[in-house]
Length: 199
Length: 330
Image (tube, rainbow over all chains, first blue to last red; front, side, top):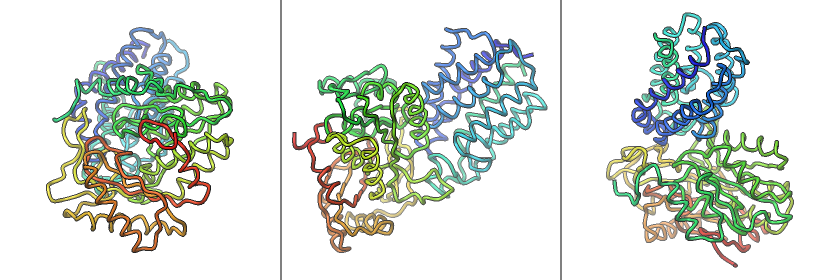
């Protein structure tokens, strides 16, 4: 069973991962973006860590909705609303239960990813975070480690795609051959689930 | 890195403190990142709010004041501002006559301004939105994020600002803003990339002797790269790209805009070529603006924006404005 403490660990593991990979995310965001993805997410997830420590929400749902709201208020760009909506919607779907099982989380996270697709309008194949998150949701039924593997594969698979959303889409064919930074950072988020679960 | 900064983390806050010190007619909330004209809210008048990533100065903070924006919301460098900023700005400037959000067409800007509009409306503020998407370099198809908002943002902010200033209602100000956007097209070229503080090195590698055609304002590469061209050749290319997409019957406003690192000397020379190219193609220029208005940090290059005008929009363009970045008539 996954309690508030698990979800807090998920967020802090993501923050640590983003800290480690911030330069790499910025480097990925350079040829097909504006070189700010790493620092934006770093700022956002550090703020999430801080607010979770300060307010200590007591349920899984409360942890994620607070984290999502914080990301919206701190990250900016497209990532803020998209990641913020992902976590807020997932949190909302978890209700006010003190703990949830992996199946309930998978369903809630699926709803979160659906909300991101509705907000940003991206579909699989557009070379975005959706190319990581959709396979991750599908694999969640086999556990967090499986979801991590699927997410990492999904992120790598964005490299040969032509971007159809976001800043990379302005480059047309020149976006081909570069791994998408948003897909990469969302793979970090999914991998942190496994880490928070000790896998 | 050759930058006049302390540390990358404080660049935006430092600039806001400097703006406040230079312009006592502005209220600058450094902590919450909102720049407001000090006399806001102005009774009975529609208020204009815009914003976007920092790094494009004077856009948008330099355009706050009578005759133009009521408030501007600066994000981190090249990063859209967050909804909290626009909600705070809207609340500060709304006199009850409503607020117009002027939103450049970038995914982040659109998402954050949309969220802010919803939140502001929850607080009883009437919000209208207009999108700026003038850049012709991006094919406006189902398969991109759409055309970028670039130089025409200045035309929209000035002309809509004048309409608001003379007491026009929200629907009319929105309609005029929309019309200005629809009648504007832009094209830009880069002779260098820019260097962001977060990255510490150029955003893309542009070798000597080459240039990028069809750029945006966030240091991303353009649509294509070519061998270096003369000012005359670039002017022909840019004007052709624009006129392929619009056929002005009326005279135009012309903005010859520097991306930040190109000397005014060169921009004026480029203007001579652009005017020649327009004359050769039978386009009359009513008014011209040359300078750094919608920049991209330290990028070398320039963009051209044409806005087809009529009697009303020309009158609104000529109307007085008093901001840090644009001032005439008062």
